[in-house]
Figure 1 (tube, rainbow, N blue to C red):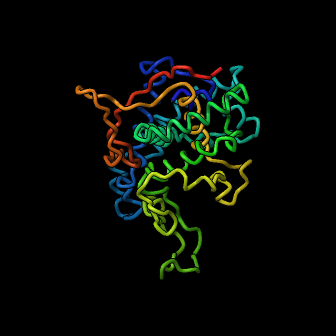
Figure 2: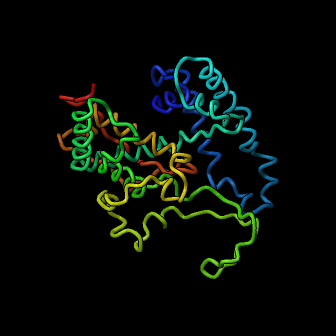
Figure 3: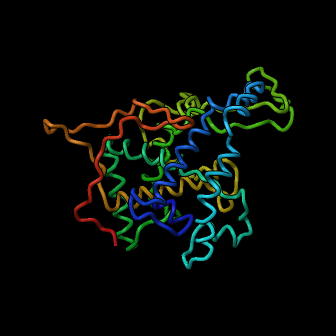
Length: 303
């Protein structure tokens, strides 16, 4: 959370008891609830809109009464501070307005949770990535940044694989067609105004694309290291996935300084998190078994 706050606003919470931390986490929980596609029945059955009007204030009301009062002061404080941060850069580029701030902390937090439990279970992979980060530090006398990712092919591959292996949502964001789609999809003609939603599990575990899709195999991406924005046929300088950058920075800093280890039971045996246990958090899927330890490394090379 502090990495997200620092990058965006140049501000940190002092602890999990800090009022800022509590407010942001509370807002995230509510945001996840509003993003639950099950609750958004009016998109699929317009007649259900009357129930939203009567019993649910809706996302717009939540943004005005909860989200904006929380983040507007943070944005104003960032503008007035001497700290370089994301919202300042947006204003410099003339991209800052009431609707330009996209709060995707929820997906970042869930992705980070999956990263930690997966690395806890795959200790050999974790050690190999840590060795790669250490080698960069020894060579360059600093921590690697996102622009240095070509020097850390294993870390990039591991990040791509855990995002594939355990997706944060069963479905992608809803989209509407702006016009009739003349090309049929599996025999369907898609009309203008149709709501389209992607099945993320089907995409991420497609055996025609991935060999052994149910296995965690970072090596499958070692020859496919391009950023997701490049793969989406866009200019990576103009558009890259902010969440991916943050997760990369989280991994670098954690692995450079700490070791993610299993918990030990009363008998002294290590217990790995069960990666098949899922927690439905509305629009997102979290690991249900989140038992692991983060211990400070001995002989850390961080400067």
